[in-house]
Image (cartoon, rainbow, N blue to C red; front, side, top):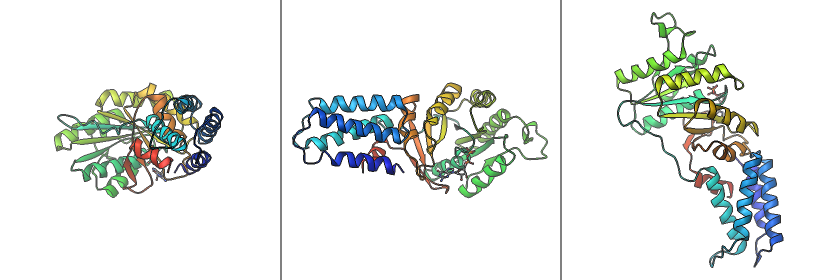
Length: 304
Ligand code: GDP
């Protein structure tokens, strides 16, 4: 993950090694290389512009350190600014004070929502919670079955409309808003303390999808709305994130598929563009390939 970005930055800093003092030309050259590395990693152009402007200003500023040589000082500045762009502090899940915590998942089709539902359920179970997954994706024919398989693998129960059942909510072609609402009522009755609502995605942004997600949000009033984004997508990530932010006003971001050769663009852009924190990272297809997102650790990993 982030291999080429990481390599490019490391190579850039190597040029500064051993320099006793950085001239303005040194700083300019370094900032130029950083800009190129970020653009190649598909970081959104306005984010790159802002990021490099801050680096330049700080590197030329009066930050003198007894302990660090000028090259190390630049690495430190870049590390701190990467942390900033990734979100600063780790953002933890907002849990309900009483009654079940409702977490809604949103994102494009194939982003990794259903897989994430299992991972998040398992992670919460490991922390002593009693979660239930709710199958509100009634768009794809296999989505409900897929969530049931995911739930089984994760050892987390699934609330799903059952084919042939009599309730109006139990019709797989039925109303995802009603399923979500019913799922929360079910959790309340059965004393589950976290409800994870999987929702339908589409291949691209469309108004019907947004309306449905918004209707589900309004119906179950979630404590968290997690927007799941495939970290492999390039510059498009920003437009998708903006559209979902406008459409459902999500509370946090999950970066999925960080195990692939994700170039880093989505990770480094989404926070700046939406102002919403990255909360989790998905790093594989397995139920345990999942971690809380720590901006400081991620920044250090990129500069490793
Ligand atoms: P949804 O349409 O948003 O529910 O997406 P899915 O959960 O069905 O995921 C789409 C595909 O991506 C599936 O084949 C998953 O196995 C795969 N997938 C999901 N998360 C990850 C991840 O973190 N890493 C990798 N490599 N594959 C993932």
